[in-house]
Length: 212
Image 1 (cartoon, rainbow, N blue to C red):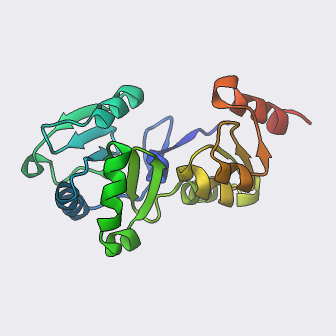
Image 2: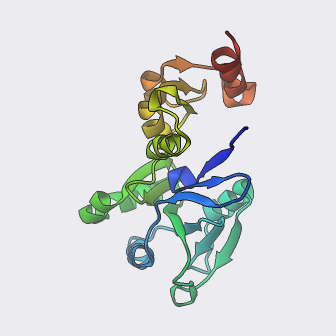
């Protein structure tokens, strides 16, 4: 019997593909949302909040270009709500700065250190800076899901191309860097395949999974 499970939102949760039932969740609190929203406004950088059911909340009516772009590519629902109208029972997968790179560059030096210590923080793109539960990394999620399915870490194959894939590349049993990956990923991976646009993942799976 084939069991298909999905890790979503960079490791914030894993769900059964058949039932949609959560296997585990590592989320952020509503208090985290309120504090980060206040700090983001003070630092003049755009913040967006992603929920486990793929809604993207922004609290400013002046919706940033990168939030619109993110919803276009991910097909998430974009919702503007003032802080006071955001439901307190939302399940927050991650909070992100989504803004012009220079705005994030200017904000980062003024981010309180205790927030850097509290969250798993990563610059996943020049225009994205992410705040997540410390347990919500792709690497931790891959290992945790493997344990749930009775799969040893040494048997897990991982593949990635950006900074937010690094924990997965380092923790998996065999790691693959895409041909378009950043240098750090290529240096850490066991094998470098072709690019995303040239079916690099399919080629790697064919080579290491289906070939004898």
